[in-house]
Length: 254
Image 1 (spheres, rainbow, N blue to C red):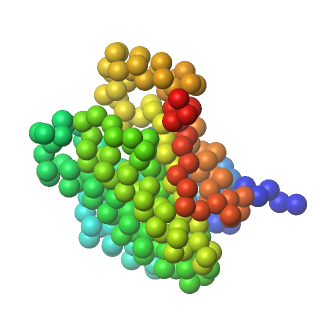
Image 2 (image 1 turned 45 degrees about the vertical axis):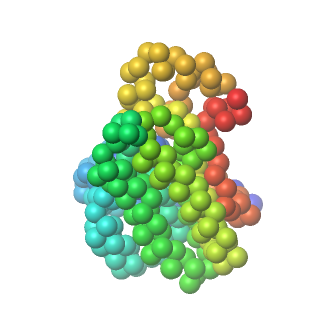
């Protein structure tokens, strides 16, 4: 009997795959057997660290440099995916950015940019990829949400708005597509030690306050997201759709 977590023979698109959480998600999917299409704004066409890691594990890797702040570039990437000679089985929407400034002074252009990268372009690509999945009657879509899909945060109004939108979008798409064989879920990372949280890690008072509230007692690592990603991408989660799964060291239960 094969493992319900075996992804051998599948093809996964992972955005934001150059580093951090996206790297860890792509690595975990490859370890489960999935071939990977990695996407990041500055991803090298050949020789990237994520390409080396995926191919070490055995699956194939193809890289694309796509700026999610550029809607035309995202739609052009969707055209390239449509032209592939094999279907997309798994779409992991992890591309993202964050801008920090008090709400009263938050530049509108930064607010708009964060929403474009973290929400609007995510939907634009998902819509296109999902059409093929719906025609075939199968597919797995995973978004990266956030603790700020549940909470308000401080000095990150655009990020909170976008990640709250991702949680709602996950439910809306699941309502329409699950009956047609396409599950849609999200993962909400807790406080993970990545570039996006560097400002918090570097603030001794804030970092201490965060660690005091996290039951696990530590910052999360990007690798902590791997198991949840493989689960939601696998046959083991065929009856799971429309959820936002926290991977947060117990933060939301506190």
